[in-house]
Length: 174
Image (tube, rainbow, N blue to C red; front, side, top):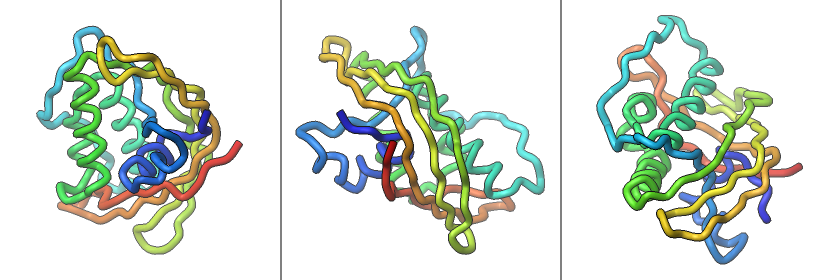
């Protein structure tokens, strides 16, 4: 099994790297709730006026987990630039999972470190427990081993708030 974290799986999925590791792409997503919704309506959240990029990235990762569990993408979309290719592909993949009755059992990931590489460009290292998932109601269960993963995020300011412009996996390890 592969050892990947959420950020590594998402970045690799959309860059094709994860598919090169095996026969099936195995993105990491969390279990949908029994009454999940495929809603896109924006969420209301309280965002500090002077939010740091590091705090924003932690909030973004948490919003991604909520989207995985619930099929609700409003908050995640609000934190992503509308032209973010990896963000939009992540949403579409999750929509297919939820639409076809699939589910994933994922306990979330823990942010280990956030490093500024250059202005508005950050490297985030995370640790994730193992994930079990199926892509449709009658699909076979699959497993992704947990472990450390590193991803890079490109940020921009829109209307005074950060958004993710793009993300990519840059490695995983134990």
